Length: 475
Image (tube, rainbow, N blue to C red; front, side):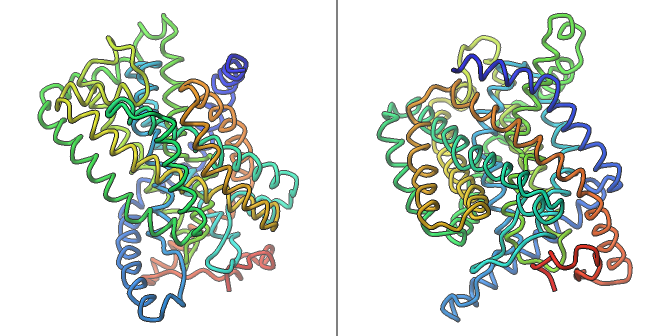
């Protein structure tokens, strides 16, 4: 089975998906006038303001015994980054370098830079077409396909694909990586590690999106800052090697030697695949949590999620890549995935390296498990309101698939994810290309209000009289 999945993945990723991802990213970058670059200041301002608002809201909720419940932009950012910042940053980057060479890192950067415009579009659409839910808002690609394109069959197809990708197969990768890291560092059995992960994940997911948001908003900053500090220390200690590292990345991304040997294609394909798995721009996952945020204008979540792509790839992925390339072990070691990252760290900071990575990947990947679960939940709710179906999904997502990932092989779990990711991304790219016109008008509206001196722009659904009736999440 693994062989034919690999063959299909190679065909899809070699031709179809790379062209579609790059093409859409460039189109959205052009139509939004390079929004991901010129609006970085606004992105940071919104995130900072939201973080302060989150703290104030939590205090008020305690005073009112939790009667006020909503998801802030910062919490939505934390949940989405929780799924982005995870296995892809440590194991995925290592796998891309091991298979595609140092040049794969360059193509990861490219897909992040242009893909952040795609992330802006899809998350803004999720906010525009969101619906009111009992505890917060709910939405995502299935909802904007249904309400914006009026294609129920396509919306259900997307919901099924996303549930299979994130709620099920992605969680197997997270568990697989955690178990590999724990076995490498401590010699712990994957069976017992997987069982412990499944038990804790089940406890978290049965608490709902508020519990997911609360856990992620604590875990994500801690794990990201800790890992970035360590990587920065290693880079500073080896600063004299950084010019060689950058030369290695660029030369292998465009070098004639790679073209002649077929390595250029491997670098591009693996860089794009692992870049997409890591930052998820265009895949249609982050919009599911972007829709839950309570904001005054849809564009705000577009900005926040575009910033998430930069955070994931340009910061965390780059740190992992630098550590591996400085070590030089990608050329001489047979290790792949998380084991390569652990070996690279061990070569620089000693035996503490594998232990640190094991702890870091536990936080990274576990937060991804609970974030992935919610993506699936939002789409299960789109398909059916059955409580029994939701219960079965929770058990499968946080229990069964976590245990499967703990026991399955590295190649099998990654091939399954690549398979579903290809079809999921294609479906979402079609939808956001057709609906992008609404985002362009929203961005113009936001910028016009800012030019008029409005500090906090507000959206009214009267802006879109042609679809006013389906914008139930807005006044």
